[in-house]
Length: 578
Image (cartoon, rainbow, N blue to C red; front, side, top):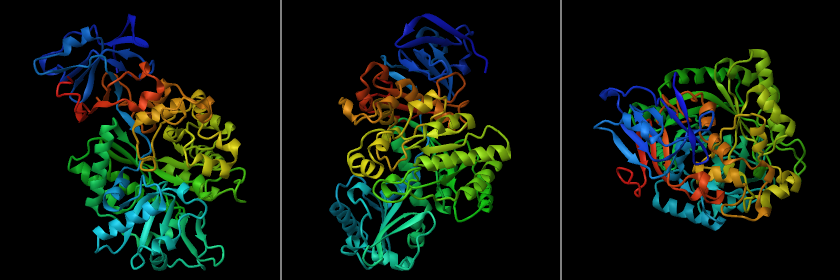
């Protein structure tokens, strides 16, 4: 795209003030802006991380970026002009790993998020059953492993509340389920049922009977007991997520591991009925019990989803589990048990599958928590490159809780993108003292979630929330945590998790904007504020560069524009931004 860039001598805020197209002739009336945001602190997140004062929007795209004075020529009689009064403008945020459709479970099943005890979980189940007396199965989501460490919650706990119909409750990290005896019975899970490869059936030490908690691939054993939500129910979840996303400034999301005909149909129905007010780039979930033949269905489905807002261009692979379930795969064993964790895929099967995914033109999106799992994930992607040839594949590895230092340079060499969750970059009460230190030991617990090292090595890092694992998924929350690596508001140096890995504010903003765009092959369309790109914009009440880092998550989103249209406006930011 041709453009003229005029660097002014003065500086605006912390960066240089830029003007694009300042010397161009005035545009004819039919080309004048629909909207001009002026008198703002516009952080463009372009390659030079320039600043500007004004942005003009026409037909959903950015028409002009530059000074207030030069913006005036784009104003016509029908142009809405908003005086930002110094407020900050950023590109629309990306959430590069979020389970948007899982919102259905908070609407149409037992919502356990935020509960503080087993008694509260059980009371929530009682209340749901009372409100739904005709339910044939009760499902729910959101129980926390630290509240019931070790084997996890027992079937007896649930049996004491409901024993005549199955109850199946998913943990907040989506890696375990808690089931009552009826659910286990209907699934045919007994003391004679062997652990599936890559999964664990927690058992009573004395009897060998199933305890009530299933982890990783063992979750699949009970899947047939749980009915799938309807298309309309999934639609409810997707639309509810969109509303929350807009309020947080999120304009593009990547949902991994979508599967099942109803959720796929719900996304398609939402797009066809013009219900989508943000972009989705989603992943299918690969089944380790199947081989590359499963890609044929993914390819057929991908062909159906080529609209501008909804596409399915990648395939998710679970390499391992999670630390709290002792299933994250580690190079050295856990401290509390004689185990390295669980690999969900055999390395050879993974390499074969990854090669087939790549050859089919999909991105590979790998879940990896443990350092050994990440090494294996990289080994497979290196083998893919050797067998299929090097291309602009942009494969991704997400979570990256523990990483060997020597593997960071391999990300850069292979062009692999990191997808971290900065929301987790702190010594979280309940997890740090009760799970991470006892399970990993102090040294490993204090070297979790590298970020700055990846950025310094030139690795593209596209930040995300992993909602609903992270319930409050505002990117501003994640940006603050990436900068401070401490509990919100804390100024105690002892609270910082791995201080050397604190990232700069500029890099954290980039990770939620242009890096997210890059991870989804959208960097030429959005992710920065540049002429010709989609007008995905967020107005904040304060300039993040002018406030203490500990106040970033308190900053209010005032306006979210998606392709030039307002999808969220705070009540304090009036119709004309006054």
